[in-house]
Image (tube, rainbow, N blue to C red):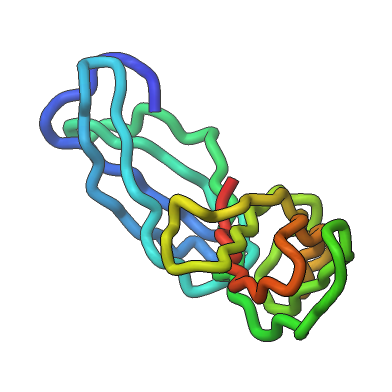
Length: 147
């Protein structure tokens, strides 16, 4: 959060549609810059009001924060083919149109990973094209759920 007059006692207040509010501690990095971590929220896919409080005064009350269901993979089909083969991963909590990252590795050495872009195609699927690897290599796929 950017503003002015941030002191030692700062917090973020997340307020849902039913009026329930959760306060999260914040850190004032400078007198004009502060941050906080979003707290756990009981409802998925809810847009909440985000207020920033410093030394007992509400500094901002017009920001919103969007909660999404925790994304997780439930099924990865066994796929074979050459590079460029479409792969659809099933799960829950994916954001349609959101760019995720998929990593592939034929060894345990993470420096050998091949990374490809994948995208949420629905709330329950992520799709990507498999990378080209050496003929006959079996690879392990890891889906990183962040930009």
